[in-house]
Image (cartoon, rainbow over all chains, first blue to last red; front, side):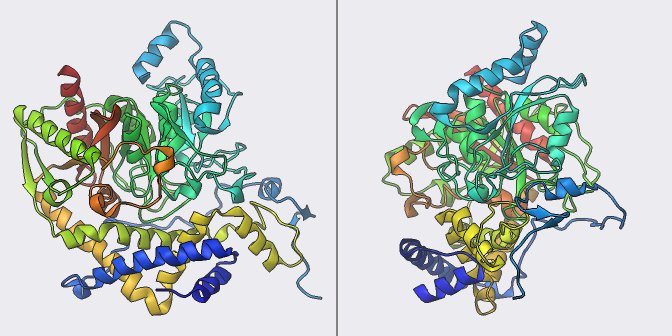
Length: 96
Length: 464
């Protein structure tokens, strides 16, 4: 069981708000998932398994050379910002 | 309509693109397949197997200067400044994009009800849903608007909706189709997939969109196959298996019973063609862990992937006084409840105190299952199972969770994403007068084998 306050704390970290109904549904859903995950920790031999974070080993992974590629214009970079001045995205003043 | 039929119409000088756009508009109010219908297009004279063919992209595929929302309020006005590789390749082959399709918000969820522009309805029965998350991509093909479409598949998001509308849905080996420019959900599980009317059309499109992309560091190298070449190969020497614990179940739901009976009939039919099929047993505890492990891994990865959606430099802008308030306001209004719940779960399982018991245990289950599958793939060429446990659900009966009774049958498609295996669903009869599917999953990098097996089974079905 997860407490409502804990969910609120997580929502705060994630930077969104949840109403009372959303908090309750989340709490209920957590109950189910945590119960299922509890069963998982009882699976024999699980503690000896290396966690898998990728479907399979990639034979070779290369990082791209540090070369200028796919350049977008300043106008394009600002296309989706509704408020910009002098090629900068405008955000509220942070220093009073 | 298939690609071949569309090409014949082109030869007859029929303007197939205009027809496609017209049909998309006619069907939009009733079925809601599209976020955007693209009416202005440039004719490309490139000669290829799909030149001049209209198609649709799921709305999480970046398209330069064309609205790309991922069906989320937070991106409702977002216009990308670059193209996803898959779009670039289709464009260069001369295929014509006619629309961006509705999906479950940010590709999470499997109902087709959570997109910011509303629910997608099933072309075969509009009181039923299409499933998701590639909902509009499935309905656009089933409605005959386009002969093929592009979707993405993180757990079953191409294959399940394809099965619900009676078409073919395929997700390749992880890394075979570039993900550059796809709005990510869960990076270790996300795949780009194809939806079409038959296996041959899937192979035709795969030939265009597969291939190494230096822009995607998970993109596979040195796989240069023509996927049309081996479609008709003899498969009588192939060995298939199915998992006992998934289909040999005591169930009260008549619909699921019928789906399982239909599956056994299909097995017999395939065996009559000389193909060996064996029943294999896997620890039920391990299989039962698939769904919770998937939710844990995908939520954890999505929480991190979507942290950039803050409403400042792009997305839903807000007029609050501080930038923190702006982000909170944008994210509160921009995400639906389902997305918030998934982010909360993702954040919870990644917390230091929970990480080992929850997130890492889910990753351990993933390895145990994939190890087991790889062991089986040493003996067998493919895994065969019913695609889903039910037919497309009625709109008012849906909840985005699974019944305990058929949890395994409705979550086994995730195996394909855990191990990056190529996996396809083909139509396989009807229950309640709605289509059901047959799922075929094979070894990594053997997409040609999976397509070959699917093509032969599809053809033998047509001959019955």
